[in-house]
Image 1 (cartoon, rainbow, N blue to C red):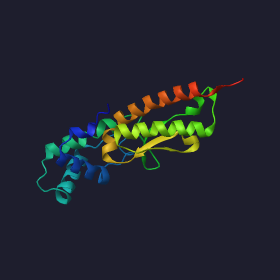
Image 2: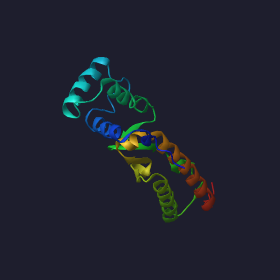
Image 3: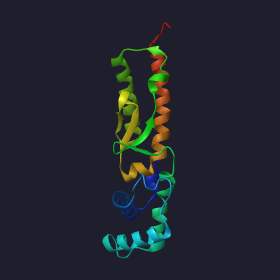
Length: 171
């Protein structure tokens, strides 16, 4: 069962987190260092002015800090403005010959399984469709680890199924 980290937040906090994600969070800039105390105070003033004049500083800081662990995660990357769950050369793990049409029928089934479990669309992008991505939303950002874990498990199952379905190669 898919557990959504996003659901731990209250509705009002989700709205503020979405605002911050769209307006204040620069994925690349905060990859190696997070906000300084002075930057947090300045951002708080701006957000309080533009978003909610009743905003509590400590609560704001706590919500802002919730971005930190995912931004620092070495697996978290943005690819073509999408959140990348995987950048794997899946074809290297396939040890059999398989008809490309059959390959994509099986792949689509795994994509559908992912979407059914998460209610999120998943895409294959890039050369050889090796980049597996989801939409770049605050919800997917906070669910990154759970989405990636599920994608990795389904990818393993997919490779196993392909290797069972195909015809052994004559090397």
